Image 1 (cartoon, rainbow, N blue to C red):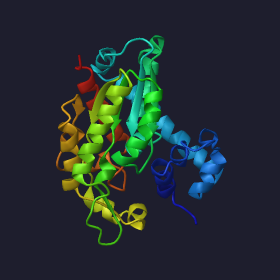
Image 2 (cartoon, rainbow, N blue to C red):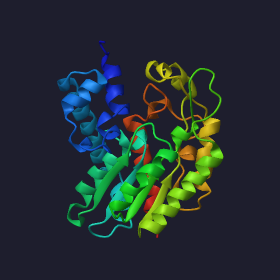
Image 3 (cartoon, one colour):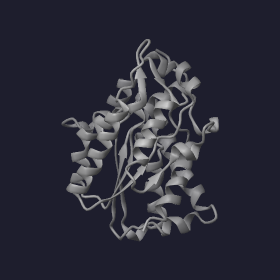
Amino acid sequence: MEWSPEQRRWLVKVLQPERTVSSLPGGGKVSAETCAALLGLEPETYRAELAQSQKGAREAAQGMLAEPGFSRMLEELPLRKSARIVTFGDSHTADPQSWAVILQELVAAQRPHDAVSVAINAVGGETTTHGLVRMGNALLQEPDWIIFFIGVNDARTQGPNAGKTLVDARETARNLEELRSRAAQGTQARRLWMTPPPVLEDRVSKHWGLSRFGVHFRNEDVRRVAEAIRALEEPTVDLFAAFGAAPPPELFTEDGLHLSLAGQRKVVLELMRTWSRVQ
């Protein structure tokens, strides 16, 4: 099948085979050729799209460092030298130009002598239930900070006439509490949470890629996930509130679910505003 440039970009951004298979034996050695084949792309096309995404993240970091006051927030983050940060989430984090990739670029540029590391533990499409499976791997990294950005897929419905979300709201709350408990018992890591932002419901329902799989979202369901995260009463970046009830369309890709580079930049900005104030 011949994909348009927009479709190719979406496939690389959203499906992320390199992260989906990373937990398998040998998953860390998956070649670009294999990833490209899984997406139905030529290897050169896959590499070019990936490189373009990474370039966007790098340029986003450079632009943010040039903004008044931003570098000060970055310097004020409660991070010791050689601190290990684990970012834990779904496609919002696994995106090759995600907020986590931008964060990697920021700490490398602004605090090069502090040897701060940012690890990305994220798989597109996963729910908080999947997160429980992956949590052990995150703890093995002995992080100083775990930044949780997971839960939007709990609010997903899938299939014709589907009325039930993938994870019930009460189960989401239990899963989040379990993630917190495991992190508290398994490490000395401090925790910071981000709520999912709202989605553009109409775009989601009409998108060629998401509609193919019967994917739907209602902001009413996303809001319940955000409420469950707030209820943990730990440091929280409330993206659901920050994006607003009618978020600017330019913060999203054409599918209305995944964030554009502008949206990822906003995530980083909101993260810095909250994190730099944590004592």
